[in-house]
Amino acid sequence: MTTITATILDGNKIATEIRSEVAQEVKALAATGVRPGLAVILAGNDPASEIYVRNKVKASAELGIHSEKLTPPGSVTTEELLGMVAELNRRDDIDGILVQLPLPTQVDAKRVLVAVAPEKDVDGLHPVNVGNLSTQRPGLVPCTPAGVMEILKRSNIPIRGQHAVVIGRSEAKPAMTSALRPVCFASRSQSAQSIAFLAAPGGVAASSLSRAPLAITAALSARAWASMLASDSP
Image (spheres, rainbow, N blue to C red):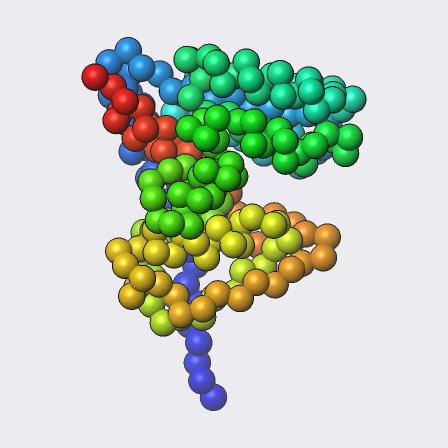
């Protein structure tokens, strides 16, 4: 009988480390007169979305990042949301925009997501950022799959030659995890040999899987903004 040992991945510990690092980066930016700003659009009253947004706003405050939560009613139209996004795109004090999904059924989510300026696209779902990722160019990337890769890196878990399974029903995150392999590791030679995707009907409850990737989402977002802003500073 083959004995298999398990390793517990402490995402909360890693999140604390990253948040401490990012807080220092944000503090350094503040000393130059730059404070990163995040705007979150939460339309409707989806309970899970409300929890995600609350946690992101809380994490932003802890890191010294300015945050705003816009809460249009569930009856909001596509045009109204496009107007909100356009205004946020114009604002210099907002560096990141997050449109919390799912949007109300009457809204054209794809039009809204594409309307977000690529350089402010926190979720990394704009076609420009997806293209940058797929061609291994710098840009904003989805934080949940990036969090998975960060956990593996900081836990010193090699993926070269390994076979991985991703369970979920999101259209973007499993594919993004695959695309991030050569981005998050030094070279393709260090990438996993293969990744299989299993769709979970109805989704997978956060409580049934490791919450580690969720714990570091905001910290990784902040790091991306901090790096971007630092490169733009005189």
